Image 1 (cartoon, helix red, strand yellow):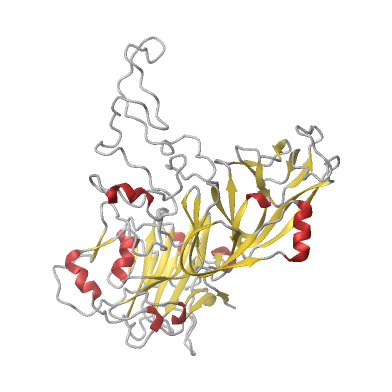
Image 2 (spheres, rainbow, N blue to C red):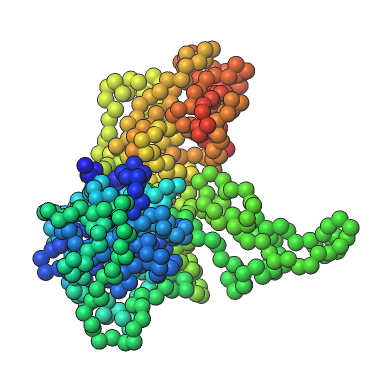
Length: 563
């Protein structure tokens, strides 16, 4: 039986099916509308770095045929065959999209879906309607993405612009001479009778079900027929990959790189060229001054290329918690990385590093101190600390979220009371508080313990309650923390960049510095604890050290600051 997904739902492919040879069917239609349904194979930075993995009507398969466009069949407007274990390691995401070819908007479409079929059985279906969109001309339907294992996410995110704008958003570029042709309606690709491969999707009537995963003879998938001939220049790919992708800020809430690309060499200097004299940049060894012997024995080694920026040299220590490889300290992934600096001085060049970071995810760090949530993605409200909103866009409603009489009593007694507001609607809300560093922690059925003081916001779908930590000799009799469980995201704030440590039998932490720990960890009071401050009856008691125990995989998060 197929699992019905809602927008924002995610799951491991291994939880849906044991197979890796999958059929993806898309059904979308509207009166007088023509659609281009495509698959973008994106790299780790969510960019189309290799345009051979843009599978569409003019390029129906990838080089190794791990992604194939099959055409119209079994009631689907378009269908694909995806063999996940053949997808090259350079491809980290397969994004399935639908764009209107010609005039029209997504609010005009009828009920549609994207579904996954494995071994002849439909395992996932995400349904949508035009009521979920407005003036958009493109929609991101669903993604296969690699996060330790392959997973599927129901996206359902509208995008202002057609196929050309969507391609540019992924870092591609439309050839100028073919741009007008790309806007012309294309005839839908119709599969010839009997041409559907043996692993086709289950039919709507009595046609045979697909045999994905167990074909007797693996048939060669025929190429989808080419569209009708349109006079054009000499044959060649319609889309070209630019040397350096430019940012697209026409739809700032859309897809952008989740990780920072490797930092280029300084402007005007070829890669690995020696750095000019002067103070070394972060992560580089200082050059010996005049007359200084660089090494034992006085032998001056030949000039060596300057090392790459921090985070790019093989063998270096991994970057601190919350910092992506190649990212400078104090800089969030994607922050200031949207595009090269504008040439010359001026207002545009000065503001370029601070532009909004585009992305297709629900939660996006704009920098270390500012977090944006897109309420339209996931379709559920967010609970945030009162007064933490600094900016919002779109139709957003803010209301008081009370804990009730019993909740206030428990919160006051345990020190874990949170003054919250409820953010709902279809817009983007920017959250921050006192310049604290913010970290988005996504839970997928697991749990994490966080002190209420360290929580900025979280999805309303998460369950949260006060957890008691027993301890003898603690003033007040116990410590308390907040336990978050379920599927959703919690935004944790810290003073400075924290460190994540694995739990071992000898792991101790100061309760004034610890921020969070895994819910499965066992927490006890250290027998060697000595109070460093006077503790009076009624005090929260969080001036003691804690010892953590647990199976491998448990962790604690500690900040370089004592509350």
